[in-house]
Image (cartoon, rainbow, N blue to C red; front, top):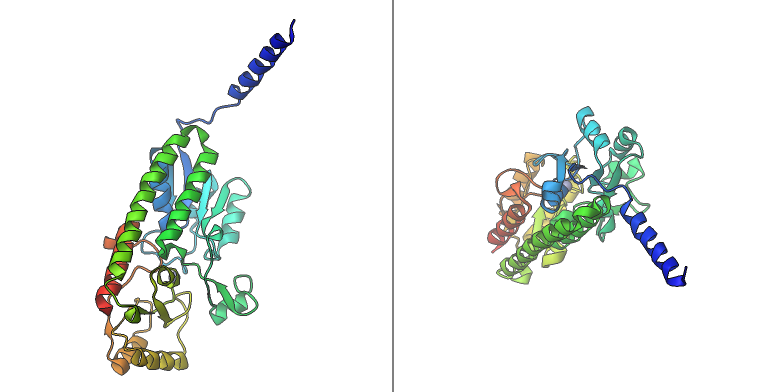
Length: 308
Ligand SMILES: [Zn+2]
């Protein structure tokens, strides 16, 4: 036997070995459980016919208040991949971990994205693990930046490829198409915001959810509430905000129905600002907000048109 024959034999066994790895069953769809409405859309767009996505946090549901039901936990336990918003938004994570054990791969997508900091609610500071020493926490609302959603799309794409390498080409093609849409959306948002002079880019909202949007498009944010939707603003904070709105000549403010109506009535009475319309702060919702693109278009148009 000459050395070449030995080499060929070795090569054949290597190749054979490679093909004898049990193939991923591509006929069966990957099961994905998602705790974020935006990640649900991304997984559906990128995974298409290769995935079954259970959106456990539903459009319009407040993710700060959401608690998983026994059925949600069951679906998470059965999933091949669990998608989480991350940045400590899922305060019920221990329940998910308990229900799923180490079986399912869970991916806290937001944790891989850059963080803006925000002041924690006093409640959350006392709660401990989500708050840092100085009372600042990671702002969880990363999805209000289109650029962040683009990064999230590549993270989800790579996770799907890892679980199902056979369908890599499809995941890459779908992600590319979705990313192209997001690029166009970001370009549109920049053009729309350009209609508003820089000194008018002041965003007063009822809960502090738009820092990432503000950073992308050059707005300054004044929040009436904190990060979540459950705490009442203090009288002093409201008084300061009223002064700021008057001083900055802010024409419109943006409220959510979680805000105490007495507070919004007082602000409007004292400042003469009008209500600028409602925004989708916490992910997908109904109507315009039923797709990510629709949500961003609604938010940006509402803000720009009201502040002009
Ligand atoms: Zn929020």
